[in-house]
Image 1: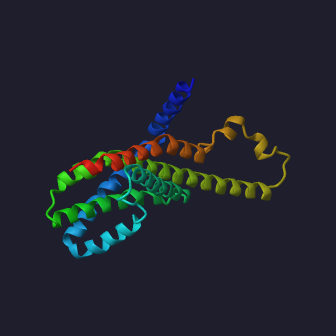
Image 2: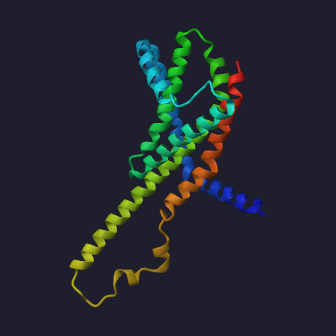
Image 3: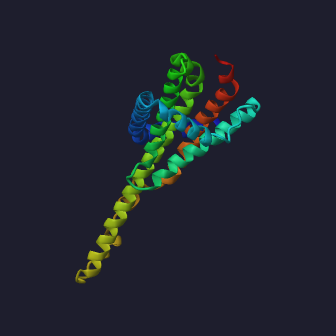
Length: 234
């Protein structure tokens, strides 16, 4: 009984991806790559900055206890990453600023930092990434990019709402100063399709649903792999 509704939800999500999120996902992926290149080059050229940057990253992740059980580690990682993704999406409330794009850029910068540190420490960086980053990173970074897409979609939608509200306010001002010639009010003349065709209707609801259907499952899988599998890879 529950298979069809779930299938329908993901069919609708696929349509939303193709119609709205995919173009933002591409921008987010570019920001991730740019952050990685910028971070790697910066810390390779100025290795003295690595220690300060690492201390900052470690402090930001101090609530994650690596010495705990795999289950506790996985749940902590899931909570930490979900919280960060929520912050990235909520940043989209600011119209047209696209603050969420900073999230993949920063993540890319951290990966660039790790690559630079591994290089300076003499580690096999490709193998390090292959065993310690890639297994869970495939899911985690996909979730980061998708969350960024949702935040950028939200930022665009909020911008459209702000523009529409400004235009409506301008129209009301003109209507209030225009001479009364017995014409019907603007709202009365508006047809039903015009009143119900707002492309931003249900904006927050769509973002929340997409976050629950896609981002959280990806983060859960990533956390499970990082907690149970990654520590055993060398």
